Length: 283
Image 1 (spheres, rainbow, N blue to C red):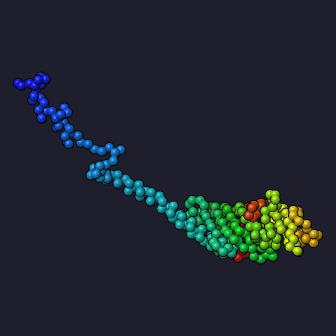
Image 2 (cartoon, one colour):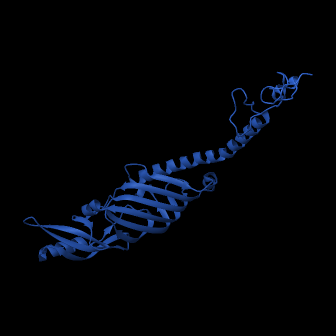
């Protein structure tokens, strides 16, 4: 046997037994390992497995169950939308608002509430409610109602809420129009400022307290001169203007005025009531 100068067998290192790296070519051929990409690895082109039929059936079944669960919710929402639309239309016609109010029937399901004849909670927000039939009309810029236990008569002649809370916003321009004086926020909480025009282009500024009195009326009392000089004749005029409270005539029957507060833009009036009735023919 022929050996190299290093003492190794020539045939042990021939082209078939040694490839230059000491590994057998056939030990790592293409078929030695059945490699599958990991789920955490991106699939190579042509290696993504086909969707398994069982998983597809499970996904379709889950989607079907979700659709069945959503059907009652969708049907209930349709009923609620119809009630809200009819309520908004009736309120607009009864109160004479230029636009239909925003109405929301709360609580689920609405279908069972409608079937019982009583809606548990209804929210109504109306804008620009006019005040007709008054010598000093004071419109309501915004009225927000929260009604509990709302029912309606069989002949649709009235709707009645077991209890209600409401807030009304009265803008200073509307208050000014009702009083005939330029009204703005006063120097202290609970007071408003009024500008009185005198002959010879003179002005006098007075402040007066604002409060809620019986009969859903707003009273203006205890006026004080805070700028300029008010003659006796002017004082007598202000006495006549402020001595009569302004009644809010565009408020649903049964609501009682509880408080009036002053803000930068107008007056906020708060109401509560029981057995609050809406009668379109009387609005």
